Structures are given as C-alpha cells and as structure tokens.
Length: 347
Length: 162
Image 1 (spheres, one colour):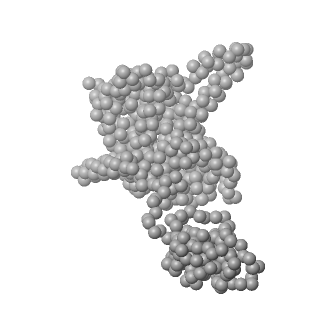
Image 2: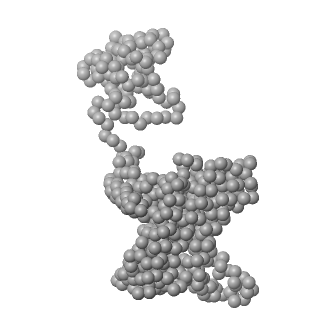
Image 3: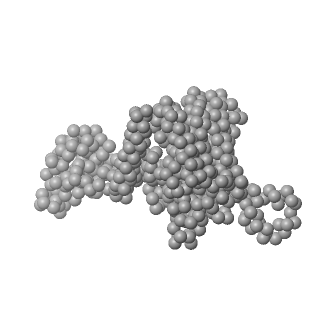
C-alpha cells in the first residue's frame, strides 16, 4: 500500500483533498487492484483446471472460444453467470442466503492483504501476517454454514456441516506445520519469512532440513482439506450431496462461491510458496533479473497444478477416513515435526 | 502400531502410483477429434446420402419400385417421335422424359436396394453424412431438371410416393 500511496501522491492537487479521503483512497485502490488480479488469476485457473483434467483423461477440453485452445472459454462462462437471473428460492432465509457468498469470498479476499507478491509489491506487512491469514481464512466457514443453513435444503446443510467439521479440524495440523517455519524465522511477518529464505533454492525452508520438508507436505495435505479440494471435497461431493452448500445458488451468487473456491486455492498455494518455497526470491542467482511477482506467481501456479493433478488422480475419502487422517495421522506427525524442527533450530 | 505405519506407507505408495498414472496420461495424445474441423475418412462404399446423376437416368422407375420405404417418386412421360434421341452415358436410349425425381431422405432407410436396381448406375449412395436441415421438408431432394410437355397429372408411370 505504501507504493500505491506514493504513486497517488504524484496526482496533482492530491494533497489538497481532505485527510479522510487521503487515507481512504489508497485502501480502495489497492483492494480494486487485488480484486482485479484475483479475478484474472481465477479465470486462468479455471481454464487450467479444465485443460489439466481433460488431458489427464485423454481429452482436449475447451478448444473453440477465443481461438487458441479455448482461452476465452472462462471469460464467456463468467459473463454468462453474471447475466443470469438471480434466483432466490421461496423458503430460504433471505438475508443470510444473500449475504453468504460474499462472506465466503471475503474470507479469501481479506487474506490477500498480507501476501507479499514481490519485494515491494504487497498491500501491507503486518507483524502478525501469517497468524492473520490463518485467522481470516477460517472466516469463510461461517459463510459456508450460513449458506447451508439459509438454503433450507438438506443437501446444503449436510455439505456445510461437513465443511465446518473438516475445515476446523484440518486447520490444526496446518497451523502447527506453519509454526515449524515460524520457529526458524522468529517472526510472523510474511515479508520477514521470505527475507529469511533469500539466496538460492537451498535456502528455502523446503530444503533446509527433513522436518521442514515433511512440514511442507503436512501443510499441503491440510490445505487441500481446508479449501475443499479432492480428495477432501466432501462438502460439495457431487455424487452424494448434489452440489453441497451451494446447491440452491445460481447466477452471480454461485459465481462468487466459485470465485471464493479458486481464490482459496490460490491463497493456500501462495502461502505454501511464501513459507516453504521462498516467495518472490529466485531459485538460482542467474534468474534474479526476473521480477519478484512473476517468480511468486510461477511458484503458486506450480502448487496449484499439483493440487489439480491430485484432484484428477485420487478418489474422494469417506467421512471417517477424513477424520482418521486428520486426528490420527497428520496431527501426531505435525507435533513430532514441531519437536524435531525445534531441536534442529537449537542445534 | 506396526499396522498404523504400514497403512501410512501404503497410502503414500498408492497416492504416488495413482499420480504417476495420471501424469502418464497427461502427456498422451488426446483421442478427441475436433469434429467440424477434422473428420474421419469414411470407408469406401459407405451408404449415406443418395445422389442421382439425372443426366444418366432413363426414368425406368425400378428404384421407386424396389424401395422398401417408398421414399422415391418418379414421374415420366414418353418423348415425342420427332424429338432428337437422347442417350445416357452408357449408351442406353432415354425414351422417357423424367420430369419428377424426388427422394425423401427423411424416409430413406439406407438399405441401398435402389442403387442395385438402377440399370444405368446413375443412382448412388455418396459418403456425405452432414445434411441436417431446419425443416423436414428440406429433406426432399428434387433431382429432375426437365419440364413436362404435357401438363402434369395426365400421365403417371410410377405410383405415388410414400
């Protein structure tokens, strides 16, 4: 935000504006910039998902709209969703029903405030950055429960109950895996965490020691469950629950759920890239001429690709298996990892 | 305790295995055919849309008689004695003037019997399979080019079409 504020200073007569506006305009501008970036990233990710899923199944995926490999397919789909009628079923709780998609999206959107895309391109550097992300991203569960409850539909309610159980339980191993990194950095600030990994890929926390490598895997699995991706997509299991918590939604509100889902995917991938893959720092010193945001996006996209790859190769878990993996496997392992990582840090 | 670790190991192995299978398929050439742009070559002697090379048709009406669904309608009249003789490509004299030769492709069952019956081999099945239209009436193809001398309705060689 500092850089945006500096840019805004160059506008003539900007200093003449009232102080409240001067404080407000950078916030509005940076949120618009992040929203635009996010929407673009989501459009690209949806296209990528369709392409990856198609090629894994020996198909081609969208090929027509826009010419080259159907690159404009998601733009057309998004326009269609925005132009559709906003249907509100008769027996829903209207206020909650209308509010829920935006709260779900808010949870994903607010976390982007502290993500460092580059050495100087971030909105703000909170000194409790990663804690803020963990706290804010669990806000979307409230939105999901609101959607499921307000829809007055048993499938929606089942989906949102599962989502709540799953997201809240998997937050624990994810947070403990994040703690292992914090032990080494000694700070919760996202920028500080990246600065601690500067200087080639051997300095990344992923390759520092085996405990951190396993912590990355634990975080990756837990984050898959947090964003309801296959094999943990029980809240929206098509074969059991129609569409889960967004069964009753259509048009723009459905689009917001969709946007939030992919924004969450992008968020957990970016957090993993920041914590374990060195954020904006280049893997080799030769590659340092590449701008930081590009490196960051490439790393996030690689992780997103792995998420998609897993989605199209693994079947969905059962509810009891889901809980088994969390409480009996990931949680003990993450506690062992935090002990091991702490021991290595003292050495 | 041992089964616990064995289960975890087995789980990791199966995940790695299934992801390896998926990645192999990721780089396999796709089986999809981009249909309107690319098409399969149809086998020789495919039985699809009928075509009548009406210049060679002698108007015998055998096709109409052999058709199991009565989808061919042929109407002919005799040529006058003073008219110059007309011949088909294989030398058969065209004694009759075919002024109606309609095929209703919506009724056709693609058996190909009409093409076997045709003495001058002017009625053939082509390999063309893309002829969907908006109205079913457009599936009636009018092949005849000549006009009758005597007003229509006075003479009919072939019975009415189905």
